[in-house]
Length: 261
Image 1: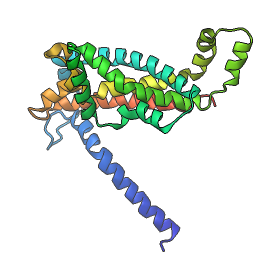
Image 2 (image 1 turned 90 degrees about the vertical axis):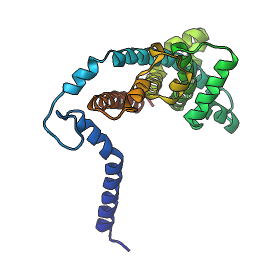
Image 3 (image 1 turned 135 degrees about the vertical axis):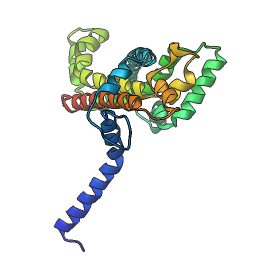
């Protein structure tokens, strides 16, 4: 049997190898985005030239605008519906079947959900474009928002709602003045998570987008560029997406940690 110090060293080495396997390629990608030569085989000096070229690319700028529009509107829709859904589920007797039905979009593969949404839009003769991507992103984001808000509601003191109603406040006034402010950190955390997922999502957007650049999102633009090879410009794009996603998720986790118990 291994002694405790040796055992900890072995486990530490194993953990280090796992982190290296997971984040080593990402670190290399970030470093190459600052490589002056743009070659993956030789480092010739630090430069931000590729970030300038990326920002000067009109197609990338248009795709970023489309992505922000989709992420903003889908997040608003998903946050509103997901929060109300979480409140409703907390009032009902929970069941495994109901939870499974609500959380199904989180579990099934993206490709299956994308095909299902495309078939649904086609059956309705629904014109594809940014609006269809917004609707599709809202569908799978609702479940994520609901999960985060329900976790917040587990620590919610329902007696303050009862006290508010006993004092003569209506249910709507109680929700706006009591319930929503208390659970707002969880709601905002769910919204940030939904925004991050929408910005990063590719498969569902690819299937539910219309033709032409007017409905091309940022991940779709990256995919169209990477088919001709990985360039330093793409490394710069990936680094920025990675940084934005990391910051949003970090803020989301911080909000959840700071929730009142």
